[in-house]
View 1 (cartoon, rainbow, N blue to C red):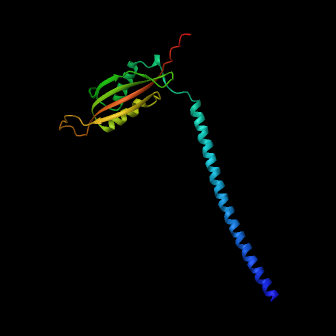
View 2 (view 1 turned 120 degrees about the vertical axis):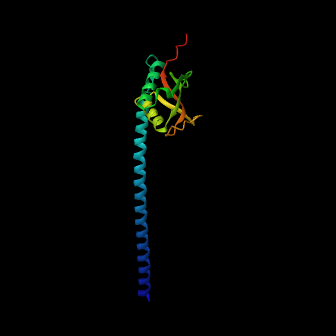
View 3 (view 1 turned 60 degrees about the horizontal axis):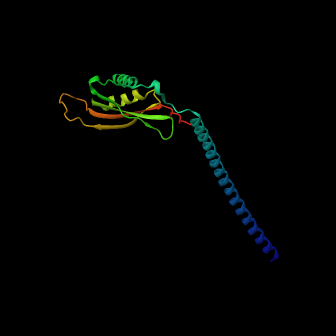
Length: 179
């Protein structure tokens, strides 16, 4: 009886220790997976922080006030329209709007309203791509499309009237305050 009891105790302890070993192994594997995910997240966070630091160190791109006269922008818009195969008569208006200071910075945001008539979506997208290409200081702020009032039956392609607001960022230091 004593031998039988000690065998049962041995079997119970063996099964218990085996179960504990299996449970410990799965906890170890689970902890290893959690540690891998945490290491990947840490690496990603470090890369994003480096990217943010790089962007903070990069100066904001803007035109200098003397380099961005309205005539230069008008010429740039006309060239972009020509490249996008927009007829010169379709570019109805290039209307500079009053600029406003961007917060408390030395930058001005100067919007320019463009109005185009009878342009296809393909032409408009090509124009927007061309007008902003290589011009970090020039961005499309808004686009408003409307169907033309009268559509000639001879027009095969669907055309639109488009109002586009381009905004150029111009470096314009605030005047020094008198002492």
